[in-house]
Length: 340
Image (cartoon, rainbow, N blue to C red; front, side, top):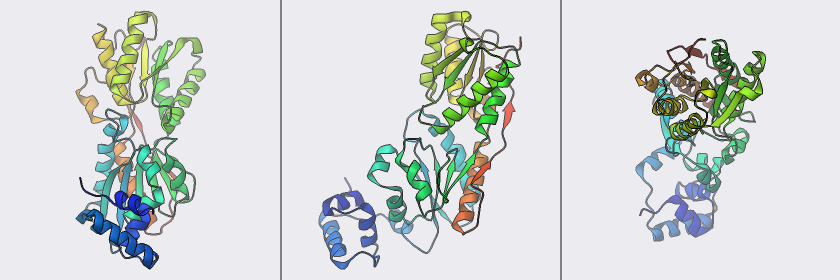
């Protein structure tokens, strides 16, 4: 197994950032420490790879795309990432800027601070997606000197900007869409509790339900955790227990959850929309292959990637940008919601 920069840091008792700077010849590392690190690295057989050498070059602007959700199998982050990357790399195409994707979970964030990460790879700016409210980087990003743009993540501090959907407006709209078609018994499938968007979307759902006079006793909260499997299991169990005596509509906080919900309904022997209605949220292309077509919110995910990268590049160039920029959304009406 190859020796990593972390192994060298652990053996010498210094930070990853210090090892990186020592091995790259930075003058702010004292001579004694630098020699100790170089000696240890040689003894361990550490060999920096070519990509690390390229990233450590100060001659070019290096952009990092950090995704905290991509490591989690079947999570929403995995489905969203490709669309964000498509938009981000579309903006960078032909500009001669290096943009590397890093999957960094909570454990990795505890082992290496945001500042150390950026320093280690000579990062000029960071595009962030998938961060949870309890991730260490949530607090560190806004205080950092490194320009950073979060996709659907709001940071505190001058250098943490945000590209987002108007979550409250969009989820209130999709909820109202369902209620205005006669549904008064509704199940809401929530995402993970440590995601900002879960709280935003649920608040919007509650506001729409109250506005339309839907009683709390007619609302069921299920937990889909932003995955097909969790949603499938939650909905199947609910339907097996209640049949058609419970909710008539399932409002999901993501398209992946809507797919799991659809499968559960169909496996229980029911049809959409005759027996139950379903809505999603995201606008993923995979819904084009689901029957019947699922009504959803198209939040223009690739557009977020494009605009987010554009904003980040402007920040790296020293230009002033708005703290929050909202990307337009729209309801994609298909065949999954029955009108009474």
